[in-house]
Amino acid sequence: MKLKLHELQKPLTLSLSETDSWFCNIFESLKLKTQGPLSLHLVITKEKEDIFFEGHLKVKLTLNCSRCSENASYAFDEFFSPVFTHGQDPRVSDAELSKNELDITYFKEDEIDVGEVVREQIELMIPLQPYCSEKCKGMCPQCGQNLNIKSCACKKDDVYSPFQVLKDFRVVKQKRRK
Image (cartoon, rainbow, N blue to C red; front, side, top):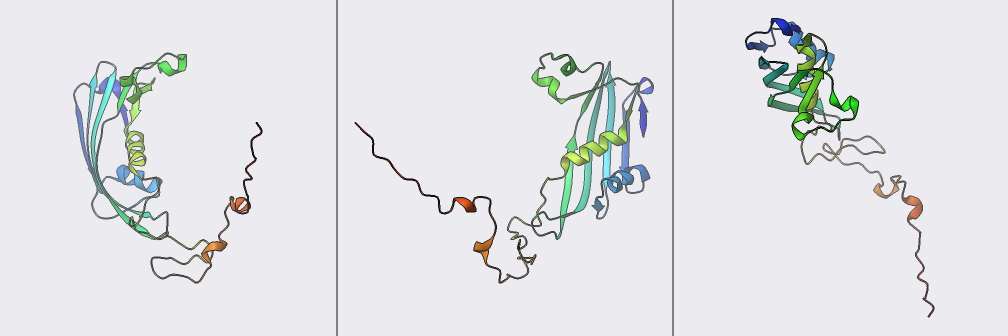
């Protein structure tokens, strides 16, 4: 969904749900499985050369646990508010940025792809390493057994470590000469 900035005279309010195909396509393109209803309330306002997004996303996702590879449910009820400004990015000219300028995205065209903005915000909300629970034991690196279901008979001390070569390393203290 492309938004022509010269046409944006008053705040634009969007309320989206799972019935809006372009909104659902964002989750499909990110290969995310949704559970139940999803909603996005978005208000886009323009002040001079600045575009302000104020969004509220509610969604429940199924993500793979990074320890045991089982499905894990994550509920998101997140607010986001990116700021876009028309013009040249000062970082290109090696100018010093103030603290307030770090949260600003610069653009040159007369339009912004609202779908890309929403997609970026969803990507930022997803945890890098999702867990099914904080107590997840993961998988055995040798046999692949899910240790949450049952333990395995693999020897734990045979696990390869790049520091194994240092296990027999001894430090010899030398006496100081006076």
